[in-house]
Amino acid sequence: MDFSLSEEHLMIRDAARDFANTELLPGVIERDEKQEFPDELVRKMSELGFMGIMVDPQYGGSGMDTISYVLIMEELSKIDASASVIVSVNNSLVCYGLQAFGSDLQKEKYLTKLAAGELIGAFCLSEPEAGSDATSQKTTAIDHGDHYILNGTKNWITNGGRSDIYLVIAQTDRDKGHKGINAFIVEKGMPGFDIGPKEDKLGIRGSDTHTLQFNDVKVPKENRIGEDGFGFKFAMKTLSGGRIGIAAQALGIASGAYEIAKNYSKERKAFGTEICNHQA
Image (cartoon, rainbow, N blue to C red; front, top):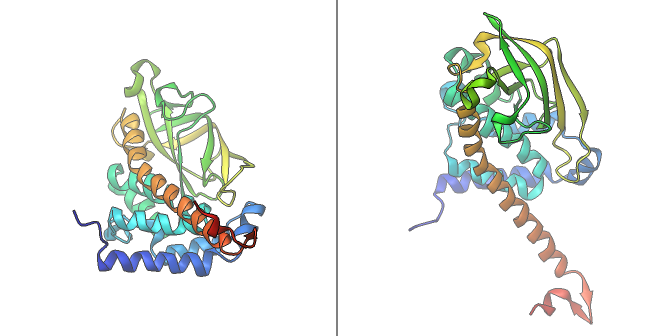
């Protein structure tokens, strides 16, 4: 089996590597310390097509394949994992979820702008007492005819503060178990939707993580994703695709750490020589 990269993949990898070294590397430590990631850098990633990597060109995306996505994630993560987390959530959870399962109206209204980086998205599943176990969540969405009333709390939401739209998983009929779950598109600024303070994390601090509170938020019925009761399948299928990006990020972080350690081992001296010469 040939694992070598095609010329196209090499070009994509090199473009991501060049961007990471020229745009992300300067100030990466300061951004992490200050827990910030400038909108200007998001704009530059958007211009390279990184916010809609695998989105079909008809929706404004780059139309790249999974290998391209993995290569971009890896190269960004080598330098700044906060950048790759922002890109990963927007791509693998939000854009993918809407492209695969959203209505034509939802794709036209949201997906095209997400792929272009004009909007940023967040995926809202985790709660204080529920993570990937979607059937245990407490957030509810009650059907009121032409709209739902959303109540609940979502925790540890990546892009929670900077996002414009949020894909929210909620219980609509607890008696139906996993068939009583739906996914909704919630826009920032909807009455009753509040964003809590930024979490003070140990790492990847440039990526903002927040608690979200929904208090009687009125969500139009056309903002439900898929048929009634599709929310559990939507969450599981979307998360499965997202895990590829997480693996690529982990590989990139490890590779970047190795390069830093290797270079340092050629500078640091002990017992009369560089420490790399003491390798067993």
